[in-house]
Amino acid sequence: MAPTKRGEKAAQPTPKGQDPGPGLARELHILGYASVNLNLALSACDFLLSSSLQPQDAVSRCLLAGVVVLYGQLFKRSGGVGRLDLAEELVPAASHEIHHQLILMRDKIIAHRDLDGVYTKYGRANQLYLLRTPEAYGWAAPDFTGMDRGLLTEVRALIKGVQKRVDWQIEKREHALEGVIKRLPPGQYRLVLDMDPVSVEQLQEHELFDEMNIPLTRLP
Image (tube, rainbow, N blue to C red; front, side, top):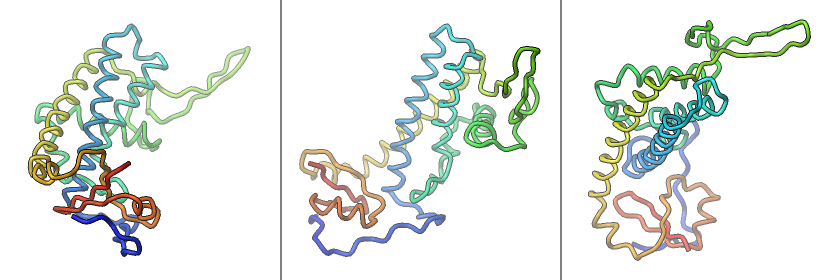
């Protein structure tokens, strides 16, 4: 394994809108971020379940929106990285229905404001209402992220199940790389996926190790 040399031609970045295709490095990138995000979502669920916050409270709604977005990221395509083909296989069979509900909420209500959004007990979710009183007026939207404790408990169980499967997929790939990792000098490394000119300039002062198509740069 040799360090990157100045003037060495770098790989071109993936054109926008194109799938970079499968690869161990990209799979690790997706799974690694998913593990972190799912852990954050679990922490938010635990906080809400142990707090006295009500589903309609502003803080509760913000945290629930974060849970949905953090959970859904694993199942969406990211620019320059692509999408994990086996993502849907990480969902426990017993939780498919609630999984699809969360993805629908993410796609139609929270991450986007599609007019064909789902219905709530207050009407279609993505409608804006004008509230007029004799003294004042204001705008309001239906409460679309409220979850009672029963539903939130199911969501937590789903996230925990997916996290367990994600961590297992990471362990499988780490096992395949164990020999490579053990030969690296002690230190902190960054996984390099996009060798654009800015990245190349930043990496020129650091060693770049590339074995089994896993490019790692050793940070100071």
